[in-house]
Length: 281
Figure (cartoon, rainbow, N blue to C red):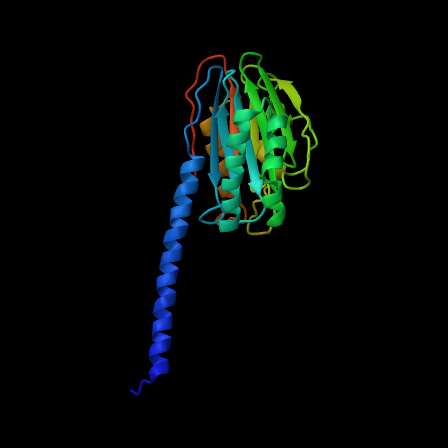
């Protein structure tokens, strides 16, 4: 068969593309490992409760984010967030957000101050990239049994009352997403938590999960799942939620990142668990 120079150029072009695809895949896997390591970092141990976090990206890497930060006054600072977009761009912004949170947590006294400092730190970058981040930040104080929180456009967590077994959203407090406007000052709200109370932080990938009929999982189904499993430890509640979502979607490809954090109050010291994808199948 006759082969001219164009044949070899085409063949070499295919080989180059193949090499580039392999290199890109290696870099994506490396980015996934970095993200997983950051999300699955050491979870602080504290008396009076247990906490866990889990994140399952819709793609190999995602833009959802959660973190725990122990404060010198004995409090634990919790944050959960959702970066606009998916995949590699969202993952890069997630790393930027994590760095801003860690820096702000060291130099601020409260969740509202933390969100204010984060917005100041990364607003210009987010504006340049035409992106934003929704965040919910909370401080749990085991000495006063108080949860103090601030919200930057994120879903309000669900509060499970250990005595009445009622489930409702935490009292709402307004706050614009980080990157939405400059010079924002985020206000705070506080609630007292009692023994066996649970707070469920989550991203909208849970309630917006879709089944084969195009129906969404929705908040009502999440509340029902939490009601059925509220007496379990946080790790088991987390697994029950994921099992419920998997059963509902029945193999339909995941459209958005799924992330949750649970804080459960207990008078007895409990083991602290930190879980991260891909623990779910």
